[in-house]
Image (cartoon, rainbow, N blue to C red; front, side):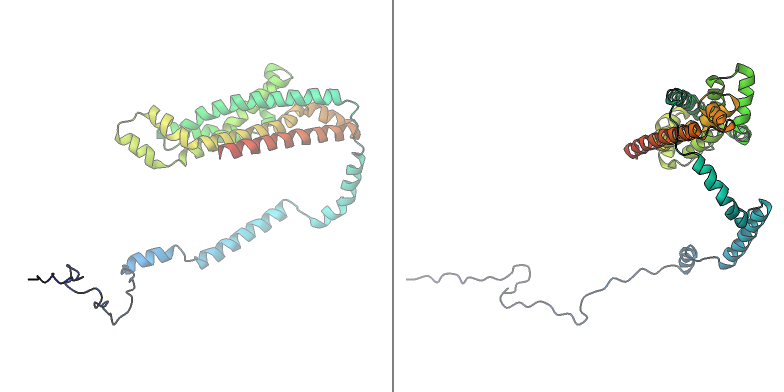
Length: 302
């Protein structure tokens, strides 16, 4: 007596269909496409407004800018014809600078080292004092009773030329690099202090808000929220200050505030063009080396 074996089926238990005979469902409409959500007309108008060029204001602003530019050219007596006529004299002056005379290179080198030392000390003192002042000149850190007086003081300092500060300190401490260092330090507070403050104001407000929510103090906000975010810009601006102080030290020497500026002035007054050319070449090399070093440091911190 034989028993019939159960019939084998390959039906899909979920659909109860034979997969060999099952067919894919056909759709009459083809692939579905996503439809963009409907946008409120007011919201669409607001978004499109950012890409519209205000033609009337743009044209008016261009006309005003052109008028101011022409007015400035006329008031400053800028004359292309006169510049062309003076090209011959400029060429003659440049020809007198060659060949350079490096007979006093030892003196030039010593004064360049003094100029570099002045710039290093002036940058350090100026950066430290500018950073302290910048805390009081940052609107997101300082209260208003401190913010506005600090800004006014910085504006006053920035309005006074460094040569005036150099003359003041020369009369106070005498001739020499010390007066130049004091002048650079005070001048840095007005210029780089403003940039430091703007770098601190530009930090992301999100971390500061989170720290305030957990009860962080003002010191903690500055130490852990503001300074870490602004530090790359602060370092970059400090390097820029150092480069400017190297060039500025050559100018401060004109009034006896140390550096190579006095030697440069003496060479000009005595018409020693060879010596003058050698000084200029050495200054260009020093500034170029400092610029390349600053570029490498900026690349590291960026």
